[in-house]
Image 1 (cartoon, rainbow, N blue to C red):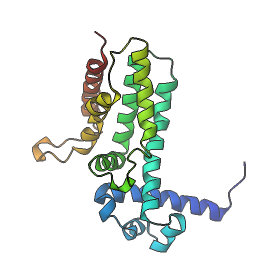
Image 2 (tube, rainbow, N blue to C red):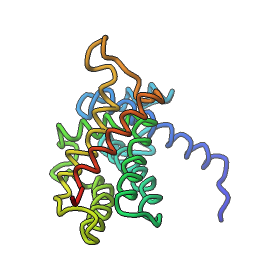
Image 3 (cartoon, one colour):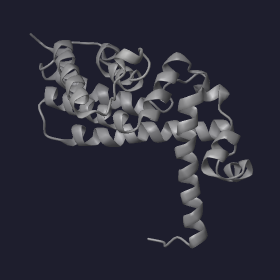
Image 4 (cartoon, one colour):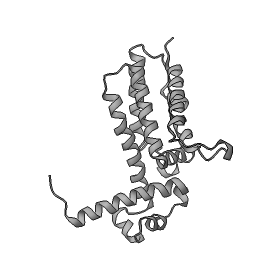
Amino acid sequence: MKTQTLPQLRGEMTRRAILAEGERVFAELGYDRARLEDVAQGVGIRRPSIVHHFAGKQELYDAVEADIYASLHACSRAALDADLAPLDQLLALLDAWLDLMVARPTAARIVQRLVADVSPRHGNPVHFSELALVDLEAVVDRGVRTGAFRPINIMQVVNGVAASTLFYVCNGRQIGSSRTYDPADPKTLAEFRALIHRIAKAAVSAE
């Protein structure tokens, strides 16, 4: 394995900092309102330093979205590779996605923005999300194939079960001061996780 030089290490650290700040800015402002200057200010560098790593706003956004879905895919592997019954595998996958989004709420906000406005994807809304969709599809297809699940369109599971995680993570401060909650609060999270499990079981039940 080739050892990186100090300048290379610094460059990689800067790139990671740009990605992290880019995710925060895109989550807060959306693609159209976000500016590279906003990202540069957050990192503590000048705009030309960003262009050294990413040619423009679209390239930075693509890298942020790609990283989000690569992370979802990576956390899915434990569920996909485990020797579990189909229902347990589905619940493990949903748990992995929930835990990732709770730990990384900026990712949840970006995905939710994409649901409402796919213009940053220029006509291909699943350019990066296909990874996660295929993972979920594999779990559901296995359950249907083995008879553990009733025949069900994967989009029913996406919209009726998995997507609720986005609302849970993003709505903590969006539904009035008397209803404010912390998605990461252990008790609140446990209650929501149990609800997701009940909904998932009802959605795929073969009975």
